[in-house]
Each structure stands twice: as structure tokens, then as C-alpha cells.
Image 1: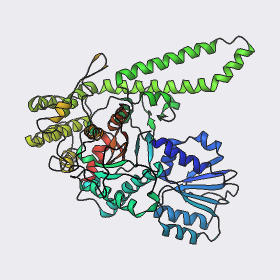
Image 2: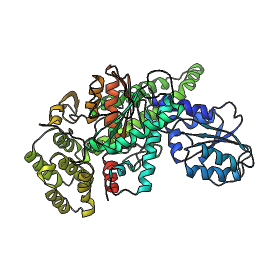
Image 3: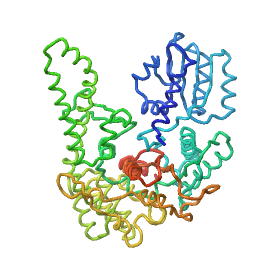
Length: 553
């Protein structure tokens, strides 16, 4: 189960279709643009004679020398654009590929609009998710928390619900898998609705009948673990997303001190960058050593290129120059990212901040944590967003102590407005103790029992910055032992007996890179179960906080 390979297969099939000869244009929508860019490069497109890539519906002159390859989601908006496009065709012919299951009436309406007979084929190619790692994907839906909100507009919430359901179905089709069972968190109405709809559609559609034993699908709710998205991260992929933003494999370094023009936006892709793929789960200290070794290797190769004394040496240099140039760019990229991460860590005192976060998440010391929190709220080095985040962690951990008014007053004293501090109320409405599934902190402090120092180090000190374990890890452990509680995780439809060999976990409301790292570690542990994690989106603390504010306003 490799989501990158599965999606690349479909993308390759679309652009490499042998029935479409000659020069081609690729027409995409906003979602399929992101899907394509995460598994395929511009160079690879040129090799397939794709000479133009643009958004469906863009106005321009006639280009009858090009054939149009259209890859879009099967939505009413895209159908309207397609009907307009083929009604006044700019290309010689059209080959249409939908990224998910297309309703039959939509194909009928499209056929009726093709009065100029320019459409040569219409197919479904199931690539409707964004592949981040081989075992991690998301849907790019950043409004899924509204499914938990009693005030969400009906039209928007229905569209978000549908996208979550269709995304899970598309992934199953792209992997050619029919689940042995679909399970969900019993205490979550949202997870239950998604699971039951996924199961119902599979049972009604013959397309899902694949041979062999299928995986378990497990639908979870982000609300049950609001702690994980709020923590400072210390592994490479997660840290980049938390401090710089990692959106569709792209990182913006624009505005960073000393950054060259060609490094203002860089790509961090597991499928295109071997160093990143190897080190994406490395902690900050180990990452520094790995980058140092990468730089040393580059310097050794640079010295090789200085010894050019003959025509043969020159020819050898030219033969290896493309790889050397690519290596140079890669080294510069990782050195620049590492430098900016280190600068932000020092400037905003993130090590001390993270130590308090981890202690709140994993320990139980109300008086001590309140004292430290008040000190951080008075510290000018701590960003306003980080102050709010600390308070969010605190009110989740100590909700019963009713310290919320005191915290809001302190935040107001630092210059924050009522609208900025309202997110603390919104958080409790979204994921307070009465609303989430019991067990986040557990009886007698389960999180404290999970907390442990690990042998890796950051700057030579014992690593207290990665004590926290996502709630998902506990669920994966139960699955690996064949002990997933039937009452807590019931089945939508028929149930399969025994421990599954594969599990597709989907987090309604968004997953995180900390959870993705936990899944990668689990898969490498030899537990006998292969996990594939997906989510509505990929959250960091900023996106999670922002979405709570929007969804519960």
C-alpha cells in the first residue's frame, strides 16, 4: 500500500495514454493541479509531449495544433466549464479524465453538450487525494471542523462531508481495495456518518469488488485528540510545516535572512528528494548532523571537479555535471531550511516553550504549570500565537479548574483583543472534555504514563521535547495486538474476524505530521500490520487554531 505509487500510476496513465498522439495541453482544476504537482514534475510532463498546463476555463486564442488532456474532479462547477469549453473548442480534440466516480447523468449531460464532436474519450482515473508520503495523504479540505459545529451553514457542511466520503472512496479505488470492514469512533457522530456513508456506497457499487482480503478502514475524529496539532514539532517534516509551512510539498523561505532568490520557494518531496525522504522523521539534533554530512559530501565532490587537466577530465566532468548541479541545489536547499529553523528556534525561545508544552501535555502539575505559563505570557520573546497556543493546551489539560477568565485577562494585558482570545472558548466548545471521546488524559493521567525521555538529544541534553505520543499511537498498538475495542470502535456493516494485515486510517478534521511520523515508525517496527494514514487536511498549530475560530464563530 503505497499511495504515492498508486497516484503516480494513474497520472502516468493519463499523460502517457498511447491513443493521444502528438503535442498536448493539460487542463486541470485547482485540486487536480495540486494532486499532479505532488507526484509528477514539469520535466516528466515535457517528456510526454505536454507543452501547456493551465486551468480549465481559461480564456485564450485557438490552439488547434494541440490536443487537450483534461483531468478534473467530477463536480457541477467543472461540468459547467467543460460544457462551455467544448461548446467553443480551443483545441483540436478533448480527452477527459475524471479523478473520482462520476455520476452517470453527468456523463450524459456532457455528451449532449458535445455537438461539435470534439470529445474523444471520457474515463474515470481514481486519483483524488494528495500523496505526501508513501503512507500519508490528505484531501486539501481545510474546513472539515465545521462538521462538528452546530452553527455550520448547511450547504457548506454538506459539501465538506461529501468531499471526505468521496476522498476515502477514491483512495480505495486507486489502491484497488475493498475493505474487509469499516469501523469508526463510537462517540463521534461525524466519524459514524462518514463511515456509514462510505460503507453504504461501496455495497451499492459493483466497482468495489476486488479480489483478495481487503484492509480495515478506520474513521477517526480530530476532535478526540486536539493536543497533537497544538504542539511544537521537532522532526524535520513536522518542524518545517509548523515553523515555515509545508503546503503541497512546497516551502516558502521568502523574507528569511540571507536567502537567495532561487531559494525563496523550495520543494520538499519524499518522491523527488532522497535526503528528505530518509530524514523526514529525524529529530532536530540528528537532522543537524545529517545536513552537515550532506554538505561534507558535496564539498568532497566539488574538489573532484577542480582537478581538470585534460580533455578526458573535462568530458568526465561534463558527464557528471547535471547530477553535480542537482546535488548542489539540494544541499543549498537543506542548509537554508536548517538555518532558518535554527534561527526561529533561538529567536522565539522554542526549546523552553516546547518543554512547558510537553510537560502540560504529559504531566499533571496544576500549580507549577500555571506559574510557568504566566511567566511565558509575560515574555516578550514569545509570539502572541504561541501564547494563545500555550493557553489552549492548558485549558484542555486543566478544564475543570476553571482558569479561563484569568488566562484571558492576562492575554488582554499583553495587548490581545477579545476576538483573539475567543478561540479558547471555541476550543472547549469543539473539543472540551464533555465533547471528545474519554481517554485523552485518562484516569490518573494516562498521558503522564505515556511520557518518557528518549535516547536522542537536542543540543546535547536529554530529549524532553518529544515525550508526547499522539492518541493515534495507542489505537495502532491495539490494532497490532488484535484488541481494538468493538464497543469503542463499532463496525458500519459486516465485520471481519481476526487481526487485519492492512489498515486505512482516515482522520476527519485533519491529520498532522506528528501522526504521520508515528505511522512511519509503526510501519517500520515489524508489527505485522501496514498502516496508511489520511486526513481531510494536514494541520499545524496555526491552521488548527484558525479553523477552530472559523468553524465555531
